[in-house]
Length: 261
Length: 117
Image (cartoon, rainbow over all chains, first blue to last red):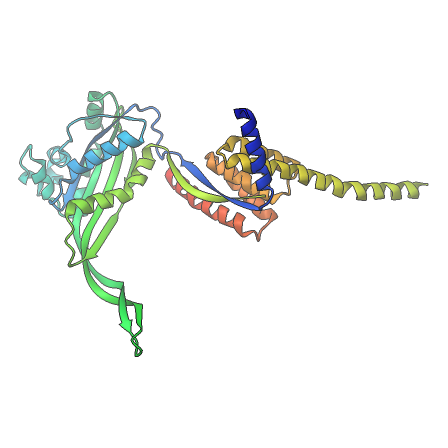
């Protein structure tokens, strides 16, 4: 039997089989358009972030590295390899004198870690956000890298502690010695991390902000569990990555639907 | 004479209309079945074409509208998918499978709309 005949016969069989049942589950992939129209950009520059909170992780460097790697694999844009900007330090330098945050001068120039370690709350991060409105700064940066789409923003990553009711399974034995597992609600102290990024997308040609995306994720573990900050950071970033990528590239959502006859 | 002619016409209409309807349904059903077979092989554009033909042949065929909604969804044509699912539900409001497809679609559509904001 030749290939075309085999294909026709198999299709015929499929139609015959299809005639015997009334519904069929099929896998589908629904494409989601990118949130941003990035068609005019050929490059993307993950410039750096103003970060605050825990100093256990170099959040600026890790985030830039992670986003670059994800964009390389999941978008059509060419990812620019450049040094990650010490944005908190640059923002502190650019701050107008009266509004300059009290902590900013304590940062040693050229040492972003010191500038960032001074930021201990999300409110303090906001004091540095004026840098995102500095169109000239972003335009100059864009010119340096052939007008890419610039990804920047603020990221707050900090240790977090919270008590609350949790459901645990407990083994109990009745009067006949029979084992049962019952859910029990108990109060537990839990600790973990909170990650609160604000991604800002800037047009490298005009220096203007195109879009801003806020996220907030937290993770809590049993107080007795010792989870490294870096692994918590990656776990939290992993949760919000689809949404971040969805801003720049088409994402497809896999699912099933029921075809009817 | 006129009475007789009208009566005869009535009989002809009564006899031909259901047959024409069932004929349309049979043709549409053939298109639907072929569409299902090709969709299961990943040929969604062909399936879409078949189900479009099916709803043209028989616009009261809920299953064809449901399948068309799925095909549109697969192709990212969300507005058309919504219309097709809603048409299917108008025709068969108690069909739990159509409702399930529609609910899943709406979840994704809401995400897409959030993206547009």
